[in-house]
Length: 185
Image (cartoon, rainbow, N blue to C red; front, side):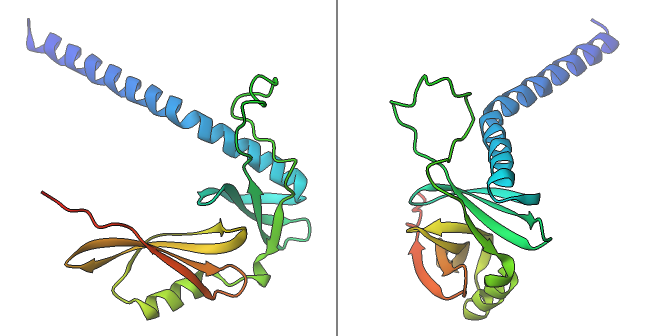
């Protein structure tokens, strides 16, 4: 076989592999993307939002979608929509797969001006823990209360990971959870 044929065959094989990876990734992500699109639409209707900036799924005690957007008066707002737990009784009721129905729990809407800002929480946190590396910071729900969640790491002989929660409205500290350290063999 000539070098030209090997090159063509290798290129086709790499292309087929990339297409397979793309199809797999899409099939894995599609339920999440469908649920996010459904929540965005539902929140726009339920909270009378003019636009949606960001939607984040937060799972702790219960799953919630936290949607950032602007309302009809161009006010920045945060909206929490509970994701109902799946039940066997609801199976086969004709609902489309990936759709979310949150009619039972009304959305919680908080204006951004009535909340502690993300930047203020970050600054306060970093002043208290300057050696910490923030991995993620997002709004969430803890024990039915809206919170800011900070997921971070610290170097203490080994890298240790933590979650800290702050009240969403005033930024006061609620609690900290330390994840178990990994023991490497």
